[in-house]
Length: 197
Image (cartoon, rainbow, N blue to C red; front, side, top):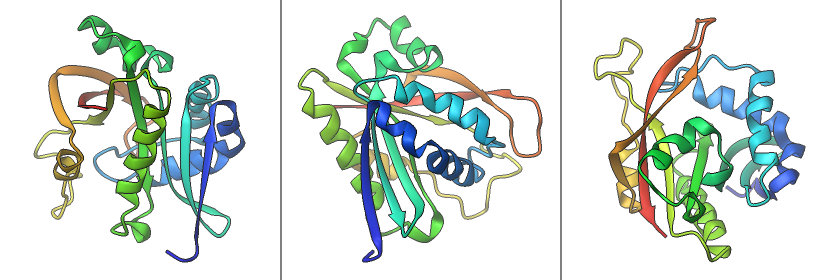
């Protein structure tokens, strides 16, 4: 890890690394369970949500000039309608919840503690405001016998539980993207995980 450097950006500053972040998201999310057939243009449009929020936050890992890992978070009130919807329907106060976006790392850099660092950085940022009480994120749910599921696939559930997060089966949304090899976006079921700050 000696060669790695770390970068933090907030709010509109995040736009300065959109190209790096978009490329990394596409590279990592190609793998199961996301199987994401992404484009740089779509990614940069999606990431504008983060540039528009005063309290959004990015923590990135670089190996030389290359971004090899990144994580983001944003107040839930500033997220897209698809992400906010289950919380609004359940009567949550969105002003008290911080949403954690991607937590992505190229395979060669995994197993070095960076996954924990990503959560530490985001939780610390959410606490700094003094007004947020909960953090949450969502993950895709694929069918158990999905044909693209690797034989050695291990979900992140155990890691998330160790971090104090609990799956909330009642909080669900649907996000659309094209699977690998597809042109058309199809809806994917997403389930939320939460913990108290």
